[in-house]
Amino acid sequence: MLIKNKEHLTKQGLKKIFSLRASINLGLSDELQLVFPDIVPAARPLPVDLKIKNFNYIAGLTSGDGCFFVSIRNSSYTVSGKSLVLKFQIVQHSRDVELMEMLISTLGCGRIELALKQSAVYYVVTKYQDILEKLIPLFDNYPIKGVKALDYSDFKKIVFLMKDKAHLTEQGLMEIQSIKLNMNLLRSRKLAKNS
Image (cartoon, rainbow, N blue to C red; front, side):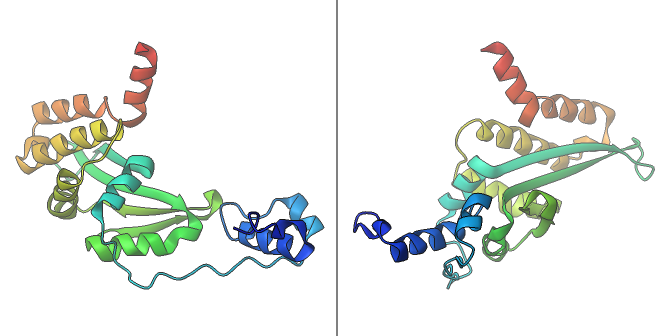
């Protein structure tokens, strides 16, 4: 609107534009900060309601920035010598901590992990009961789109194999390992290789 109203042609209008630019994405470039050192980022509105009302938003966020992980680790506490860890995460820029807090508030599970060196914030769910009782019903009712839907389908198979205690047997662990080998980057590499 500022450009449409030709405000960018004035120094004051240009400062308004740079103020808005400073508050989004990566902020102002080093060059712009050097030329306009007095620019203050525009105030961003704070969320009024801390719950997400449309669950399709969460499915869309997951389609773009979510990931389903399955990790098989050595363990001295299990008969098989292996333990299984499930992890669901969504990553955003570190400025979006409020969004991650909204996910926790809306879904009633998960935690926030900060990766400041990467300027990233993660919404993470690892508790099996939360995955089974909250995430699986969510994504069954509000489907994920694209290739990530295939990862979700594989993740869900593993969740139900665990529910049936298959992960406690050698055969079940081999089946889970086989499913795991088709997920995430491994799936992407196979798709790229076959195209």
